[in-house]
Image (tube, rainbow, N blue to C red; front, side, top):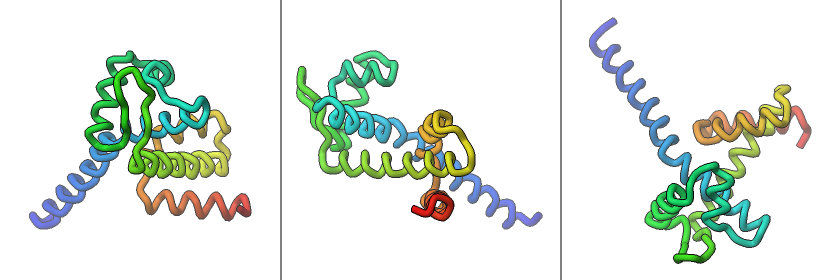
Length: 146
């Protein structure tokens, strides 16, 4: 192996792990905006206490994440009020929900039970590349005729 090959391997590895790190960083934001959208759809509002219960965390943990989401302009919140998604937050929630659906449907298509597919999709959706996601969707559509 030449020095140049070794450098290419290192660069490829670094790029792969950089993509994974970025996925981890956006994972919490995606989960929260997705859950906020779901709560608003189900109950008409998203409250800190509801988010804490759904995620199994404390209210201070939720508050810290909501502050981060406010700085990222994904949510709007005022003390003692519900949490609302901004347009950017709504768009992120929709993209996250769509990715989740594609991954879940693909897993069901290849024989994974619906319950496990739902669980596994929650982790995979944040790390799947656009290329892989597109192939998952093609396979699912060809198998289901949708």
